[in-house]
Length: 415
Image (cartoon, rainbow, N blue to C red; front, side, top):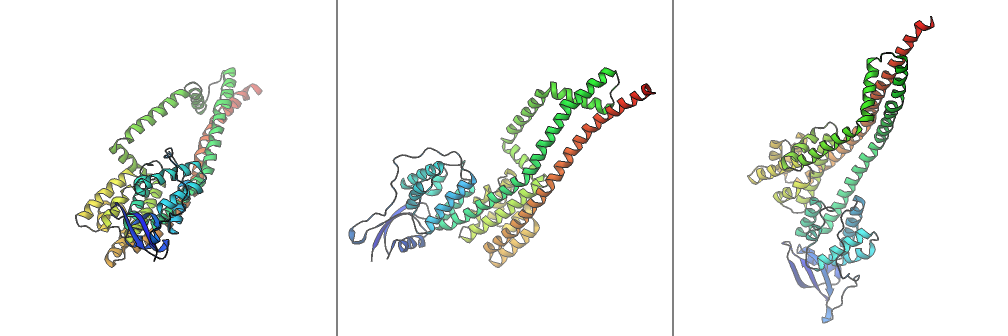
């Protein structure tokens, strides 16, 4: 039977080497994965005649650091890598092929750098940590979990679904905001035209006749004077408030207070909560279903929220679980998740089907999230139109008040 020498990484993250007997490479990789190891490199050694696999040539130097990738590019990289690993390739082979296959310069540079890191003895999750602006903590931690339990291809497929969901949600929100954004730009332009063109003409006409301006028109004239003469003050104040806000949110307490406030914003806050519920349930179910302990899974999930306030609550929840409380009890005491979600979670804990229950919860709250996005996106355009119509109406009222006042002053002269 043919023999294959291999280099792999065991569940503790250590680099190991060995020899297995198998009919073909796919069977050899299967044997290594059954030992909960991640194969990095496999070579045929039948009859003592080592025959190296046909891999793309490695580059001599590490690629330049890639600063950012779009969600679409992250999705493409993750999907391609997952497909190659699922087809029975090692990390060494898969990344080497991606260097040749991916045509985008940034993706090529990323694959090249990761390929070299793997050959230098680092794990994939360790190599990904060199790119914190590209890969989130959740992404890296899930890859680390996949390496630890020997299910990296499955984890990459889960990440592909996750990235697709995030992109779909982002696209839906952006599309929902296009029409309101057009309304805001058009309404702002209309208001500026009224304030900077029509109001000065009305004012000049009244000054010629020596008539007293009505109060609404006086307010418009004052607003026009401020816009024309002191626009720089508004910009300076806006910049000052923005700077103070950035300084405040850079502190741990300030960021926590701001993130807590964001959760209270009507519409937006509800979407944030539903997104956390769906993502929390889906990822926790995936991790627990793949053999990760609950405490380790909760540790990996602390960065999932993207919200400092919820992250702090999750730290407290994990502490309570370490002290002996069930997860549903700990979450209930900190009021993070809705009651229905906690009731279903409690049933899953009692029946021993926790992973399946969390996946079911994720399906429910993903549908709720989609429904919430549709409701909010449907409400935004009429609210924007109402605000713009109100402002334009006030401007027109101020102008028409002056016109009516002028008409009333002309009537005695006609008689």
